[in-house]
Length: 299
Image 1 (spheres, rainbow, N blue to C red):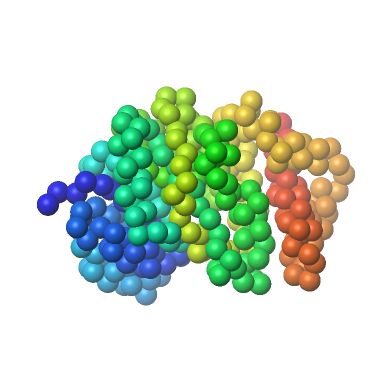
Image 2: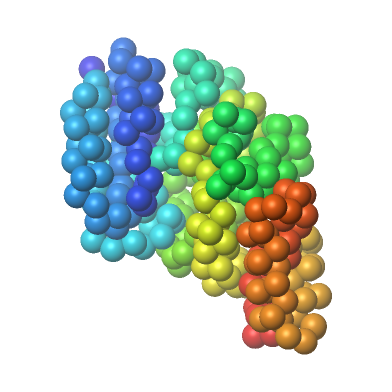
């Protein structure tokens, strides 16, 4: 039986085994093709677990292992480079399928739209996955990213969360993810803004469940590493970025003295677990903006 859908999952240190097993339950009859790319985790025990899970998977499967971490954009491109089916499901390794007909809902939407497009289902954070050590990430996701389809559709290109999208192969043939985004963040926003110029993006309510909430210190580190990606997306889409709240705050902070000390203060407030989470979340946003302020100093 030939595959009717390609499923591509990049990962770096996240364990995709639970997701592979969930996909196996939803693909036992249709034999969807599964491609994974390990973006330089260099963890033999994780590789062994993934290989064992792929051996249980009922359809064709492949694992690509990179020798070093190259960034999510390149890892997605590697997982995508041998797709054959008309439609491709992109998932992140720390997602969980929220319902037994998760894939079927995407396929029904593709039949309903009946043209090459990108379909975004969104994602959600479940309270049972929230712990004291990841409370900050949970609050940030629920506030900024876990939006219903009607809200995401107001700016369809911006809200393309590649953690769960269903996209026609003709779009991927024309628009790969930009490998210049080598750290964390912004590569899917850039890709969404780029493809929406040529193809429709439809938002539906078919959320996946985000189980891989980062610990506070990991989230802070990712934000610190994302400033180069922000610089790049600002260069590519200045007219779009200038309207974003994070950009406006970053610009204001760029005019203030002692930026480094302000960033350190915002980081400490965000990490102080005894403070109300609302206050910590504001401090986190200001910390991120302080990291991006140098982009404006640099011109």
